Length: 264
Image 1: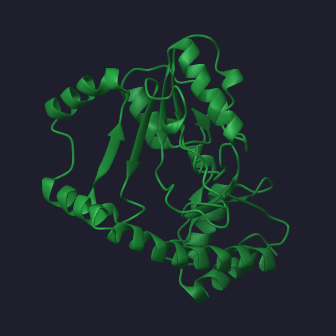
Image 2 (image 1 turned 180 degrees about the vertical axis):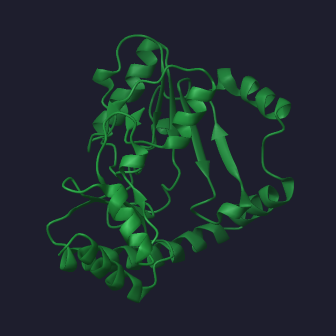
C-alpha cells in the first residue's frame, strides 16, 4: 500500500496477519514496476489518493492491472470519494479496464456521497472471490441494515442520487475554492495537494512538527489531522483538511489562524 495511506486498510491487513509493504505515495499513483513478481494484494485509492489527494494517471492504472494479471495478484480499488471532482476529466476506474474483472475488487461507500450514518458500503469482487466474500459477510454478520440499503437503492434508481451529487458538487467546489484561495492569500509559501477531487486537501509543512501545529490549531478552535499520523514508514509533515462543512467565512478565519500558528 501507499504511504502515507489509509490507516483503516493497514489495520485490517495487520489484523488478518498479512505482511504489509509500503511504497512512497507518488503524484502519478502506485508504481507497478516497484511491486515485484510475486502474487500480492495491492490496496490503492486511485481517484483521490488518501490522504495526499493525487489522481493516479491512466498509464499507472493500466500498468497496475497488467501487473495483477501477470502475477495473479489482487488489487483493491477503494473509491471512497470518487463522486466529486472539480474542473478535471474523469479517469477510468481500475475495475473497468481490460483484464481487470478477475483481479480488481472495487469498493465504495455512501459516507461521503450521502451520509456516514447510513453505514452502507459495497464491494464488487472478482468472480472467483464472490462466494468467499458472501460467506465471510454471512458468518460475521456484516453488512448494512436492509432499510437504509433499500432506501439508498431506490434513491439511486430514481435518478435522485444524480441530482443530489450535482448539487453537492457545486457546494463542495465553492467551499474548496474558498479554502484554497484563503490559504494562498494567508500562507502563500505552503504547498497544497489534492485540490482536484474529493472532500479534503493537504497542506504540506516540511519545516514544522505537524502534531504541534494540530494541537495549536485545536486550542484556537480548529480540528485538523496531522499528515504524519497517516504515515507508517515514509513520514510527511502536514495537515489533512476536510472542507465538507466549512462555512464561507470559516475559510478566511482558518487560514489566518494557520498563519498565526506558523508564526507568520
